[in-house]
Image (cartoon, rainbow, N blue to C red; front, side, top):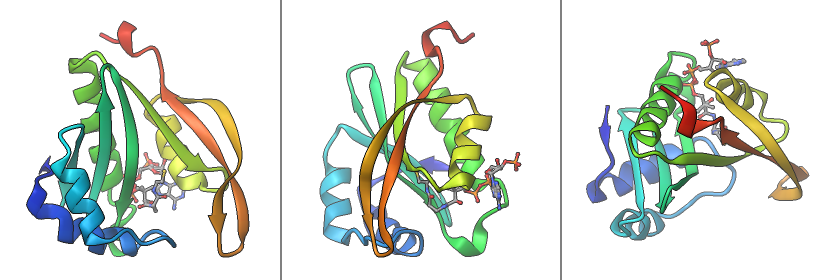
Length: 143
Ligand SMILES: CC(C)(COP(=O)(O)OP(=O)(O)OC[C@H]1O[C@@H](n2cnc3c(N)ncnc32)[C@H](O)[C@@H]1OP(=O)(O)O)[C@@H](O)C(=O)NCCC(=O)NCCS
């Protein structure tokens, strides 16, 4: 695992389009990675991209190529982000589709808690879906 760099834009574009209906262009990844507020971590087949503002981190996008899911890559990446957040005394926020039970399980198992619901947040091919907003718990009190 390593930190994301500008040269990862192409790979992030390729991996993300395997995972989400709405594809983000390579150029969009270039401009995000060029922006110093964005950072993240990657493995060969997955990555987590975040944005940091003061002591608050938002998970911008997080995905693993479907062929490589269920092997612990997602958990490793999220654990790395949590470690970074603790070291930098940051909170972590994210939005996840209400019916994305796999991702919600993963977040909950690593200590995220639901804090609110955004109605009709995602516009998908099959209709709209609510987003659950989650926050990493009591990060300032973690050892
Ligand atoms: C969510 C995602 C990143 C998880 O990555 P992954 O590498 O497959 O996950 P891991 O192998 O590390 O599994 C971690 C945990 O996820 C959950 N999980 C993984 N596969 C699961 C499955 N088929 N059913 C239920 N829970 C599952 C479990 O809690 C698991 O923990 P455990 O192994 O201790 O039981 C991946 O499924 C993905 O890219 N999904 C599509 C994009 C997405 O939904 N991103 C998040 C949007 S907010």
